[in-house]
Length: 496
Image (cartoon, rainbow, N blue to C red; front, side, top):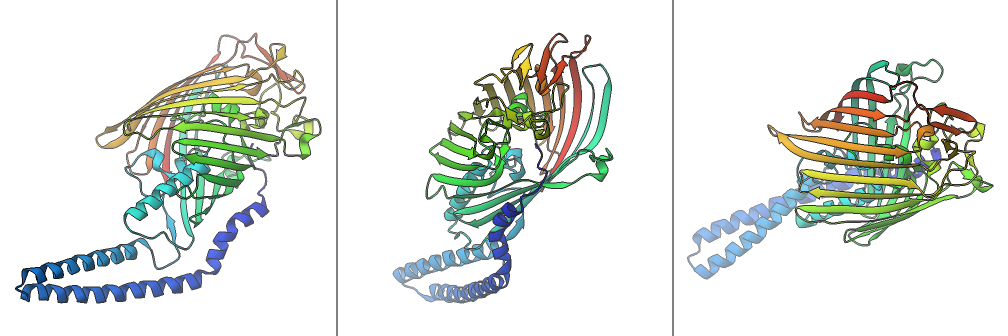
């Protein structure tokens, strides 16, 4: 469910460290100038000593004395190199940089980009990247900066698509389909703040004119406390996707599993990560509720997984649980003939007869940097009440499966990939989720930090004899023989 209002208190809370850094920018700038001047003076003095020693080496005839002088020369050269590296790494002004990467990417791949971090477990991914960057600085004998750093990233995305819907009618469009600005504030080695501002490409609610909408809203914002080089535990709080599910995809279109289960809330997350094991527990006040629990913290869940770190073959397997899957974006913001999703509190849709817990299982196999096999299954552990969601006259028991294979290669030096996927859902007619979907996708990066894609999607809806209901409405599968929807989508992304 898209955010309708920005939590001012949360924004102020997350921006306080950055505001503090701005307030003290004059002092920081003065200190940086003093440090730079001191380093320059040291470099000049060391260089003079080095020149003097080189002259002495040329004049001394004693071999032992020459060796001693050469050892001093090596020491001085090492000190000079270290000072020169520090001068290059740290700017003289407060540390704000525009970069699509966090740390130092080993080689260009789309998943190196900050904006391509997985939305789920995003806080853990950032911590792990910061951990690797700290190790890199240590290997170069470069101290970690002792003042806040702000990294800015984002993307702009355009799409063009055409297809035939379930009724056989043709549709097409050209659209600015996405734009985001992401701010990562590295407050200290133990604290960071992350904010994502997104653009809404939907139409204006009053005039149905999308170009006059284009509003920017706060999509995610949270603070994370932790340092994986010092301690395996971390804590995150704010507005974010809870660690339920994985939803890895190489396609343009969201998977059926992602639509069914991806959940954005304002939780507190307590996590653990060490030796390939990652785990998290989370709690939040959910939008949907049962009985009198609408005013309390009524949602919680847990996540557990293991990822190997070998040179060639790696796996990532995991499982997660959520107390109420009705809080997912797909269920909160559904539009069908049966009902308008659980998100309409005015019609009482948020008040459920009972909550519906769910389980997620996922597995990924990585082979070098060329092949990835991914599978994910989400299932409700309890049927919905017949007054909330049904399928063919009985309480709906929803679930979804996603499988993908992705092969990465190069075409004349340009990173490229091809992906094929199969998806299936069960008893999701009322949620406007089709029964089957077959997809294939090709992508290439003609220019660094851009990705060009084309996708074909063949979706098959439920039969016309199938029926679903919820909150007083009833819907059926598409009439006639047109159960399939075919769509071709071209997309280009620019990252910065």
